[in-house]
Length: 463
Image 1: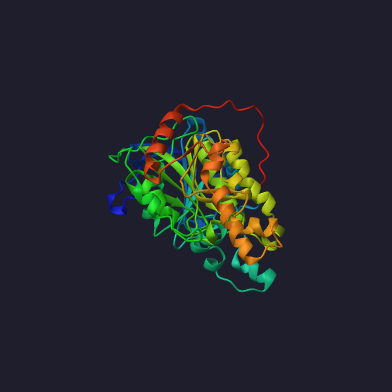
Image 2: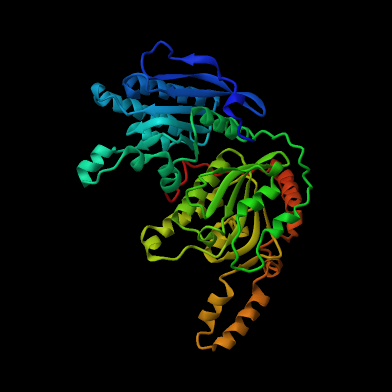
């Protein structure tokens, strides 16, 4: 899973070209990429700026759509390299219909074959919207993407702005969440694609390939528990906990700069690829807000579509409070995360590290949300809310001294994982040193998990 350097990469080998004689800025065909499992075939679509700044003609859109349809038929992952200034205005409305065909073809691929797009240059108007259809987007540092450009923004708002300020890679990594990864250049983008495909299946009827590792499945992880501070309000980096648990300490984190209060990424345990969703106490104290809910829901849905088990690490005091969040739709967006977990059929293991309060306890894949195994460390606090908040509500007229005494009693009686375990909400309270071993054993047992899915056109996700 370690990202290869550009010098270590082998040039992709084209096996079959599609519509090779059709003029335009798009080239498509089946190529091989190098992974830890050897060469793997993918449908590669390259949109370049060598002619007309990459402006798409109707035939270019048809070529992209034909590549996506072929990939769907042959069950091949799709990798699209985009550098385009949008539809060719000289072609008129037909050019718009071209990329519209492409959008429809990519939508048909969704959930059946993985779709990854890289951007090394502009992605403007229609091509920018295609990025929103991809499973993962990788942008180089100099790339930019937007639906409406600086000139139109300046014309309508009077605000001067540059292309980089409006839609640069750093902005999409930090503000919009469009960019899952930002890398230095096109060679690094190819390396990132290969790193992703080390962990992903070719299509939704395959299990992810096992990763070769010499890291023992029963390795003890006492350092995981040592990371948790002694104080309930102490901060720590949950990524350090993940790295102690996973094979060789390797985590491929996605969308690290967007909604940093929730960590999402891929790793492996005993060679089995796993998707991690984890509250991040060192950002907003691990509370959930709108971006975190969207980030987690999208990631859980991707893992569920491609048979990747999900491990959820919980340490959250709840949803982030504020009228701004409520007015922007915290109810709808918070429900996205609950919806994604509730419909997921892949193996799901939940580990509560410390705090798990209120509605956030429910949506972070709690037992009644349908996870397969719920574990907790002895440091876990599972309750409706913390002791201070509970006492302030239940004993408003108590003196300061009485409140302190009541808080201590509340903590001793309710803020421990054993009450939840006694009621069946936690399957086992484990020593942090046993976390890797317990997860590896659970993933092994759940490897053949299958669920019957009720036939329907599609669900109605709270978008």
